[in-house]
Image (cartoon, rainbow, N blue to C red; front, side, top):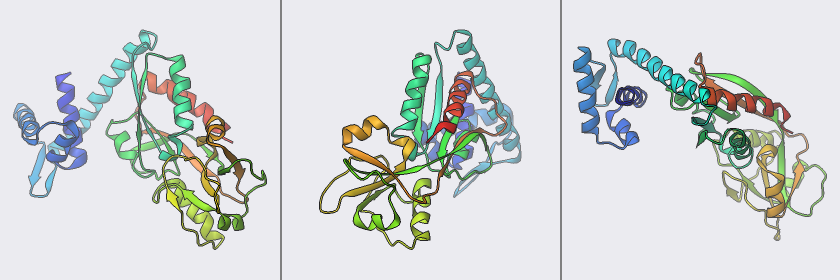
Length: 293
């Protein structure tokens, strides 16, 4: 286990390009991490990193060792998960990256369903940007990523994908007819934060209709609607607004006329086999994604 810790630390230093940043992530002092690195370099008889005033980068030998270290880390994780499978998945852990646009409704519901079948398996969820999931997957820091409007980069590959509709969240009761472009001008808008995949899709929808809209509020998760002089209108993924939440929040859901559908992808590290528990969750999610309506 001690060897796995230092190998994981080397992978983190390589990703961050900084011993200090890696130490902050590991919650140890930079000097302690540097001593571990120097000890390993002495043991191997070669320098793994080239050091400069701006940080560190892998040496030629370091690149070779780094690939080998990642394989060792992945192999150890597979062995651990295989043991968990032999014990009937009574133990285990899945690390899941999730877009904020799915973190309030869809992801928690699926995790609850998974843990009902496998109560001994923990699921660690981390919110991530739609263009920032490939690196953690490739570095072995996460098993799966569930991403809205994904921007794929080297190191990640798609396991399953689907398209999901957008919905307007308004105060209930309300007209069930689809919301038209001009209806947005009669509401105070609540939208996902700028830079998220869903927000980019929504902004494009407005731009194509030549709507100059400015949100009253930008939040990651759905928030209860308000009926005032101008009622609030949120634009969300329908999959992330559960009927139970809508009922408790006094919300009504209305389709958006002419709205595009958001792409949702389930991804893993490219060319890497999933641990047993992660494979089970991936199979569940791949089955559920096509039903998003």
